[in-house]
Image (cartoon, rainbow, N blue to C red; front, side, top):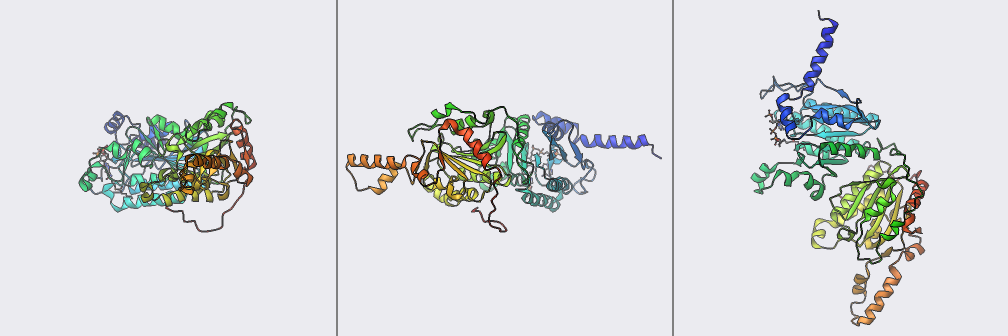
Length: 512
Ligand code: HXC
């Protein structure tokens, strides 16, 4: 009969086996490529000593293709729960050293299990993805595992935050689960996402493309818009996720965490008076206004290199998280185009789902005209942003810093689509369009230059200010830039118990 010590020894041995993953040689190769192991990643991500691993002894149940004697405890995924800054999170980390981190039926069950727990207990799921996709040897059983995860991703959407780090060559199904989550972070090295790799593309379409060009971090952060965050390396990536978690609540029934600050809530910032140029054609950096008003100047930007004419991200005001959405006059004059509309719309919907108040900074010359935009569906994509702002019931505050022209005035969280408080700087200009365009349409037969100048200055006098909108009650207040922080915090406090319910329905039909 085995002694107690024997039994305890067996547990130790089994744990050690599981912790070896794909074995010394594969781990060495993995590390040589500059990658951390699945367990090292979890250790970095979570508060020290808080990780509790589940299903450590799970193995696959396939006996074909020579897999009968290749059973590795854990089967290529490390899963469990732990804490970030003392707050509960669930985590899974795919181990590329075990069958390329591919998804088996049994390791999918591990992911499903923690997702179900996360939903029941109201905490985020963080996926550390490093996987070659469906485990080829398992056929449909693996596809079923993926679909089980996808379905849960969708059910969890808007209930708990879901975050994906892409830390390896993620192909096939390994990109679709992340695509259904709220945030995707990629690293500049070793991080790839594609449905099919360069070789398949070459065979099918004869296009030649490198792995990096096709699905690297830069591509997905600046071209496709699939990813939201980009890090230099894994360590930075993991720190960025810890910081992201600090801005968001654990579930849709909670408010975001409060973070104490020494930054005075009534801080006056005179520098802000000098940022917006009087000349409407001169660019400036809208981020200077954001960093000038948030607590300690800390702004966590999301999708920084995609559709840079729109800036989105989180900051805190008086210790509370705010979602900022802002046109960027420094890039394409802050125009609204397809990419900017989609980028902002999704961000608005996350904020609304997770009780994060929205502050919108407006300096927009309108929608971008052009054949490419029209053929690309600017009508339906612009409508996404209109839809997202309109349906959002969290506190919504808008500040027009300069231009608010045409449909873009309506779209950018105007009073008419439900903003709670609308402010403007004295530099604001609210009109159907800019002076040159307006005069060209209304006075196309006038050729006398002096007369045209008179008409233009009359138009400018009437519309190049915020007072007409304020007279109509569409702007609640006109403030000096220096007072922005103080006033926004007062309004955030005034609206913090806002309760609005949209009409009951199964769900709306956002223009996709
Ligand atoms: C089983 C896999 C695997 C997979 C990799 N491996 N992918 N095993 N199923 N899907 C194994 C390899 O055989 C190898 O085992 C080890 O993992 C490391 O892989 P390498 O190819 O040596 O690594 P690397 O050169 O870095 O290339 C990584 C890779 C490549 C780009 C991910 O392995 C690859 O292209 N894999 C297949 C990707 C794919 O097509 N997946 C199926 C997608 S379909 P050994 O024993 O040699 O170390 C899908 C359907 C879901 O996912 C659909 C949802 C909508």
